[in-house]
Image (cartoon, rainbow over all chains, first blue to last red; front, top):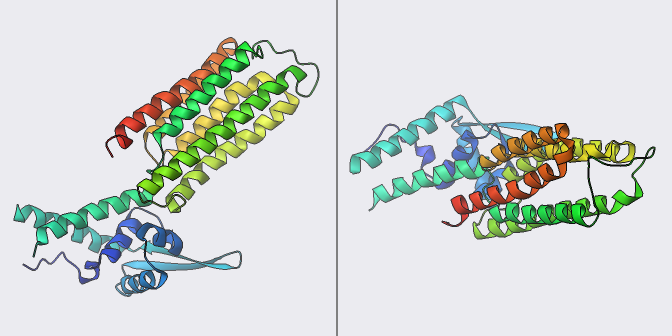
Length: 97
Length: 207
């Protein structure tokens, strides 16, 4: 059964985790996301890139003193797609009961 | 292929991530219980052995009266013990829950607490040196209540209610100075124990 609410970008647990965390926070930096998800830098970076490519998340680069600080936030499109995905999940669970 | 189980697990993980990334849930109820016990013992010692009575402080000129020095030392010891115990117990609980202790959420919670605590702490230092000393009781309750109220945005909601109770007791103790030590013991002692037990029963015992 193919459900149109499902998005390929959300097939990975890590990407789903990133979207969940960003959906309840204004913005999160790389370190915070890494701690919540318990993944390696490279792994997290590649998943963030993928979500960025879909325009589901936006990146905000700034400097804290001299240290670069990258913040991630969810976009309108990302919020919408994530909400669709949640609804689709709930429907699938209900349909199979 | 067990798809349904997968979907249910996906949803559970989404919910847990939303919770973990917005609230620090490793706060231990035992931290409240222990802080309450320290405060009750402290208030008892101050009252019985040091004859501390906020309504009846002889203040000659500026500066801290010599007979109040042990009370201030006692209060500082209680503060350090309470914060230390809270940090230690919450750290232990975060290990058990496999949540990192110093993460984005706990950092935000500590930041939210720090603003009213530092402002209140500085004011208390001014009051210590310039008086009136009796104001320390309502001020500590009031600013601690404010800091709990803002910390409640990043941890269990109940912490916010505890904050409101401390604020109320602080205002009451500013008005009824003769009962202020009793009100202080109610806020820092009894209420910590009550809320500590409540948090423990609600969130820890079952887990």
